[in-house]
Amino acid sequence: MTAPLLAFYGDDFTGSSAVMEVLTFAGIPTVMFLDPPGPEELALFPDIAAMGIAGIARSRPPDWMDQNLPEVFRALTRFGAPVTHYKVCSTFDSSPSLGSIGKAIDIGAPMLGGAWHPLVVGAPEIRRYQAFGTLFAGTDDGVYRLDRHPVMRRHPTTPMEEADLRLHLAKQTDRKIGLIDLATIKSGRASEALADCVENGAEILAIDVIDDETLVAAGQLIWNDGRAPVFAIGSQGVEYALIALWRASGRLPREFSPPKLAAVEQIFCVSGSCSPINAIQIDAAEARGFAIIELDAARAIDPEDWLQLLSLTRERALAALSDGRDALVVTARGPDDPALERVASAVERSGMAPGDLNDQIGLGLGWLVADIRTTTKLPRMVVAGGDTSGHVTTSLGALALSALAPLAPGAPLCRIHAHNPAIDGMEISLKGGQMGPRDFFLQAKGDAA
Image (cartoon, rainbow, N blue to C red; front, side, top):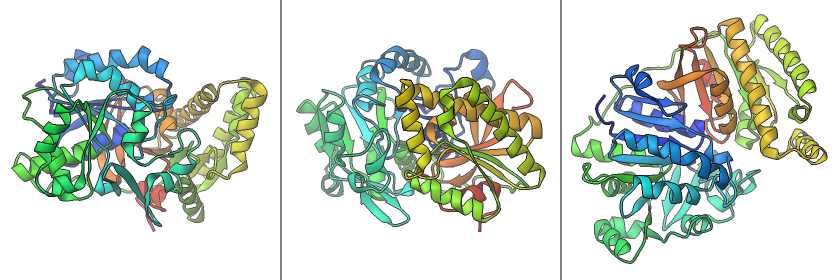
């Protein structure tokens, strides 16, 4: 295998699949592994031009990063890619104590990067915009500065209190952060500004992106034709920027036609998200006949009780599928669902760490997906929630995923590659809670309204 154009580590599974989506559907064959691949695993995919590793760093504290990220970053260096990307959420989910992007940069920079590290979070394709260092995100209701965004300002674990990414990131790292701003890019002085920032000691450079012009400019700043390794941080905006540059320079064709999504008769879905956007999608699925099966996540505190509930939920899901309906198992229907208060109360009473409970919930949903797939042989399933997606794909024993067809920006339909023939070839979409249109679950079936 020749050196890939790009290698990446995604700090959650949905974000990792989003990177794979952007590259694959631009004509760059890409595979996402669940663990650092060895020679035997790489030999299974001889034609890939980019590769990545899906991770869970977004839901982990800095101590976990110290223990786990160095091994992953060492694996990435072995691939010899000119650009290595630490992929973060397009809404920059992070804090000094959880999913710290600054901590990841501190670990990765000495191993992967050069004198400076590009930070690109804006991605107009998914309605993420950075202007003068401030991040904005679009919803069905409009575009919001991130600290006023209806989802992110109420995020249950990493609420966004500051939309200026320099100020937000400065709480997580002591490295000096500079900015290549919108006005500078539009004036054609981006390269000069970069040199000035580096001369003044900036190690991380946030690059504004709001449109096609600034996207190409960001790609030019990131890419250096392999003259030195680059450690890039950001959303899939990093890939959008590089692709925009490669298309403008003729390295990639301007048009690429990805495969079209085929419809299936039935799907099974699980959701561990409490996003209000995800709640709207659940309501839309219910209105179109999906059987919505509520799973009381608070009962995961008691292992024996949890196993009994999972078994009952499995039977309810199989009954719905036997009746010809699609089934969707949910742990919450938005941020105001009383189920969340029950979970919080159960954690407080038990003394269990919230992260450990979330792991139990995710593993339970993963067991459900694996069992339903093995029992029914359904070809396609959907998982909503970043942490949930990681647990489910791990429970399935997946070796790697590849992108099959576009579904919604940031949530492609993927194929699972696994040694287990009962799982190999299964189609799955991993969706972040805030991603996708109102009728996402219907689209996943190929039956949008």
